[in-house]
Length: 181
Image (cartoon, rainbow, N blue to C red):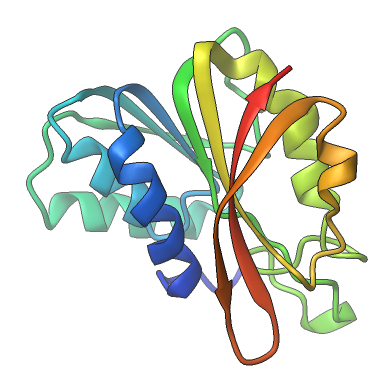
């Protein structure tokens, strides 16, 4: 696999809304470079952090980031496709900065391509996330106006609150809070 996702505007947007919600156990789905996992593990309210990615290079990058800073709790790294390997695990907060752009064919990289329409990875995630939340757990997720995701689809399973909208030059990014119905 190629191209570990590096923190950008979407990462900062997600962190801005995740930081006040860090507590207990945190799952950083699609950790990429480990940016959010390290931030969570550096918060004294957090007792456990699990960082998942499908790309072994991303997990290597995340481990390197972890060694470069002082964290309160050790991060558990899991190589897997979404919740693969997390059967029975539950968390207080799940953060997800998914690959959300539509496919460009042969140029696709797992770090940014979310499938043909851009929302396939997100929809798979949303189909399973609620089973991995503790009672009163939250999901924070980023999505793009380019991703083809509609909140009408998501509202069937989750109550949704858009926490912030960030206009960029070719898209709008949204940070959404999701709670199972």
